[in-house]
Image (cartoon, rainbow, N blue to C red; front, side):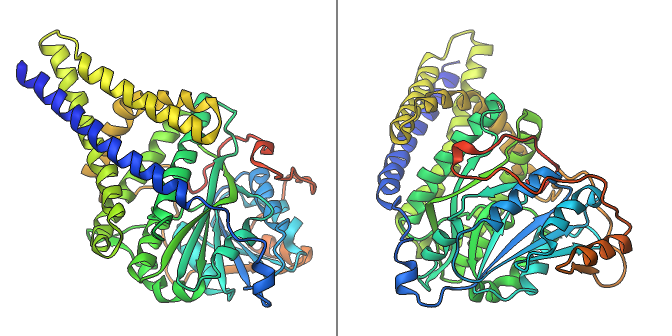
Length: 457
């Protein structure tokens, strides 16, 4: 039984040492790299602002959720040319989202594309990317609300031609709904302002997150075929599109950046079931693209190697120490005090540092994430590693089988009459009106909480 105690103590001590080195270095680089974007001199030094295309793929989204997303895009204060492409990916609820489409059908900045069948988020994005021509492309999820200055701030960062992609800071729009949404909001803050901010110090953000990520079209043109035809073990890979596209950007020699003051509020799961399904899908995509990213490490700063080791070896050591401690308790009946106290101490230190950096005491409550991580997320990641070939989205309510022939794309004209005609042709009829005036995103605190839909998350 001494073997179990020794194994648990050795594993948790190694975890504590690695975590201390990794998190200390991360905090140091995050603080240095977390600088505001140069918004004020964008117009002064760039007489001709780059044109921006915003791509919003949508699948079975709730009308009010989609409406608030689109209104936040319509309210962008960007002074350059802006086009917004809403791609409805074969949604089954077009009859109820039709009135939302109609609101923006007369706005010359909007183009609404109705795909005849469900092809997946990645192909829906590509359909709009190939049909647009802006210098920059901003991918936005249909349940995400952007602050009015997001396009301006991201475009300012993209002035450097070496930058291929940039992401904004994510917050949970429904963070006050449940204990879980509050926890996820804190998790997003840590992921953005520690992990991404430190990676951005070296121009190598490893995942420009899907809800709000801007890309340089000239770089996308080089990578679009690779992006569209990703395979894993001989099977098409559809999810994890944001991480895969980011890795492709880095492989092509472009920098990827993080803009902390470009705020995007996105809906997060409010119950454990959807949250765990989301985490399972993310874990699979992370493992898949981590293997691809390993080839990049020799060309990147040494910190990025520490980052990959910390994110992958750290959880393994934590899982080993927890398993050995539980076995020690079950077999020998002895309490693994050293393991428990070490994990508790590491948790409180991390939460205290986060509370200090964020200036919010609520981050002390992030300590609840530790038992969730040990007893739910670590086993889930192990399962993900054993089922990497599974490409099921796990959250979709409808997946239509491909039909013979080419994909049918039905663009909605910029007129209410044209929209009605397209809806009639596709067999959909609006059933519910949506108020034209919707809540405006002035700051993260003003975001209204809403229930999740079956969108791409």
